[in-house]
Length: 312
Image (cartoon, rainbow, N blue to C red; front, side, top):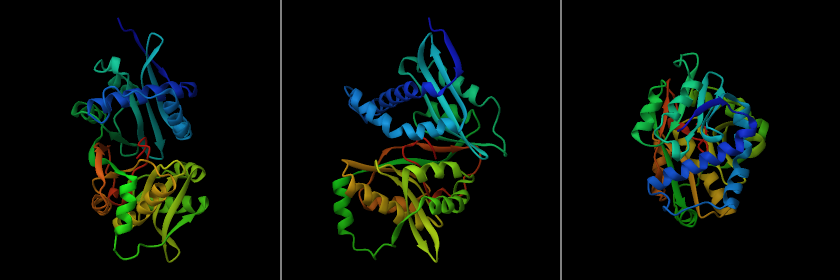
């Protein structure tokens, strides 16, 4: 018989919760036919993934509004983390071990993170994936779908070939900004798009990623973070069209310098200009989800979400 207990998570739980989340994610992918049933990650693959995401996870823990784990005896069976940026809580992770799915662990974790309803002074954002029942659970905690959250993917070799065949007018010149300039421009462009400020997040990205930008009359019109490991986003534009050149520049950089088998970004349904361009380049929806919020998010038509998909 299961004897579940809940406690506050600690920094020492990071690796164990990461591994539980990756196992639950793989199980979900298998259910949806995105992975073969026999797929198993090797310890080396899991460790490489951990090393790539460790810095971001440690940053999120430092920004935690809540970190709760669930144990069955001594076994970790679920966890959730919430990061707070100004007047917004962002649910960064909620995973339950496949062995304990359907037992109410997810709801119990959320009840401990969010015991009260959201308020106009403190909103909530969730990147929801999964079945309708999973999304319905989130609505019980005050958030509603506001936009689709599409994982768009393409084979790198085919992307580079299609880009070489484009005959459109020359794209705007894209520059790499210094970290200080990048953070200042993000502080100006991002809040009108997502409705809250995240300066510490961009200070972190300034240490770990490169910011590509289009600049007009001395001011940035589009921004996109890209890491040396090929993680693209977030990105933001002053106008919806301004998102396109910086995201394509980031995709070009990753496809040509990293030469991965595939490249991907996370787009919102509202990002019509970017989605249309990606569609014409051959990108396909790999995995659909939802951006869910307790308050309006005013400018997702000019915003590209973070990859990995732990934050908006």
